[in-house]
Image (cartoon, rainbow, N blue to C red; front, side):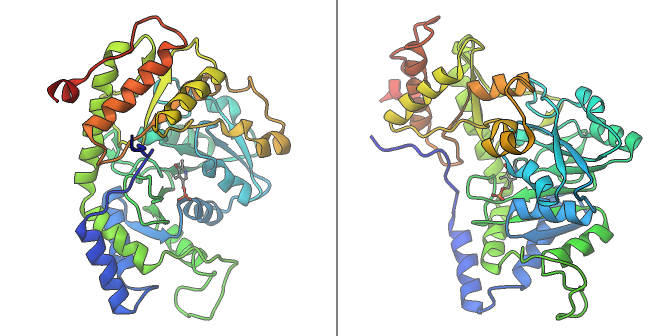
Length: 390
Ligand SMILES: *Cc1c(COP(=O)(O)O)cnc(C)c1O
């Protein structure tokens, strides 16, 4: 049987047309596509400014540089995220201070933030993990009380909203990323969104070798080459034109998985759906029941792979990554909620064009694997809708 990939970008004739026309134009860098992309992103995020970059990681880095974060500073963030969100603090020499997560949203637990604040604390990097908005209103209130900067790593949450506001518009600035597994892709790419004209100006300079934005060969600060190219921007413009379509398809695929898995809630819990916010579907991550160990989860994943079904352990805790253990002495046991959820999580194949048949094959494979471990329910040989019809 054919392998079912973990993710797959949705590329229509529109993307091909727009990228081809950039190739024909001969203008491959610093052109009109980037300006259009920034306009479209500021609308998608509900902000006054957008600054496109060559990755989500570089977007995060220039936000922290523009905010003046340095080696004297501590930055509060979540241990349950992709490693880039706390690496950005390390690039500036700052120390990441982790705070455990809320078991429902999987985002930083706002009630635990204040206990981690001290005289060295300069800011909070929240992450909208898997496309679920963090509790930004509470985070902004805490930051205001303590004079901290707020950064939203929104790389997984394009299109999400909370408290009537679009993700990307909270805090001092937000970062987006467009790797091919994200809601939209530019191949590689990223963007900062912000309502601060001053920050946007500094970040435009930082992404372009520290140039002053008026004179080309005048370098006024230490900058980087973090520019997005025109081919990527053209791809991104086509994807943003299709944003509603792409988000709706992802939502429908997520709903189908949740429907198929609903009868097996004792064994497998599905992503939380709350009406407190509108999530954007980045990945579809299930959790095995609390009595599964990390080793058993790994066995389930290996079993799926043997069946030609790709999957991933999203996310291993950042504080337990070897580099963080070595540099900062973090240990298992420090963030028990994040650790337990991390040990039991599996990301299933998820993308706009995954077929219902493939989703059913994934769920059958998963049920067969868990049946070999904790058989509370007999979950072998289930047949689903589209198979019964065949
Ligand atoms: C994807 C992602 C990033 C950015 O990744 P790049 O590969 O640098 O574009 C940053 N933070 C999180 C949480 C992400 O998921």
